[in-house]
Length: 476
DNA sequence: CTGGGGACGGGGCCC
DNA sequence: GGGGCCCCGTCCCCA
Image (cartoon, rainbow, N blue to C red; front, side):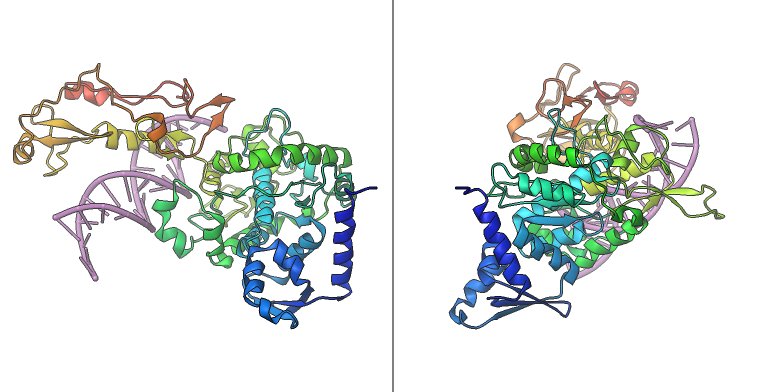
């Protein structure tokens, strides 16, 4: 007896009943469009509905009606289809809104799949050596469109994979329970005006990108608007190309890898794109480069012809797929993408704080840990080693003039910061744990050879001090 | 409560 | 393309 297909058939039956409006006891009104569903199915699929239906459980005999205005009917259609089929039709155009809606509805597995879709589309995550799922053009047919399946996955779910292949997409399988998303990336940028929540809490959020809960609290328009606009030139991508063999193999690999890596991946950085992405949007990006691989993996990042203008003689600008921002250079786009991915490849060895750029790290280190500013922190007057001293306060260093030292009662304290006395770094466990970034296959965080190993150089004379620079042993 | 300053993020652009 | 510099905007802290 084939037990493994039982739940599949059961789900198909329920889906059939839903489509025929049989035994539906829950009405969901989205943007004026009425959806019928079974409350027990919704209850089991969504934390939101679980709460909603729990509160209205006394009225079991009466149909429950829920109204949503925070996402579109199309989005809810995709989600409802997923609930009743385990297959999630994702594309670059709907993934953000689906993820946002899933966050609102507290459907963690859907969020996971969306997150993986985005991550794979970005292809920033290091291509796993043993074949971790990556949505390259080759996989997705240069369209960023895939058919994901999550949940209800049997141990050997060839049915889904096969169906996905038939749909021209591919399958991402999950086993229940899906891992809890701990972090998501911020799909905002300076130019797609950040929601008030993000702007107000940016500093607090920076070490940890948005959580699903926080995303759900964000205005949907901010999530959707930029994305939708950015995907406008993705018309040709609507046709999901097929690659059955790849789809199946990817699905199989993903099924085994996704669950164990998902949580980790969320807290990891998204290192640079893989080296072996093959096909791409050759019409737009004929050159093969590291950045191209990223763009190929996210085919909506394309050169956008904006025409010639007085201010900009360059006929092509590169458009961010997550916001309306365009840049002249691909390298600038690559840099810009970090503000969406949350990638922070440059950790401060002193305090663990991570930065998107080496220059930011350098500035931070010089300012915070190297007492690089030759001004008295207290009176703001210029200070030299002759007129003041360096004070070490934890991992912070700053300068005080002799006057302020006296006033602070620190004039008799010995501050002997010789060259042989490096900044005392906090234990690894106490440092801020953020992204663990890999580049060129080298572990950075917690490894013996970090990418940017900052070495403190304390000098005596100003002349030497001016020469004192942060030494980035590797990567510089 | 408010204004100033520090720290930081991000864009433009040069080398 | 990467590194770096400059500039500006935002947020937070503190007086």
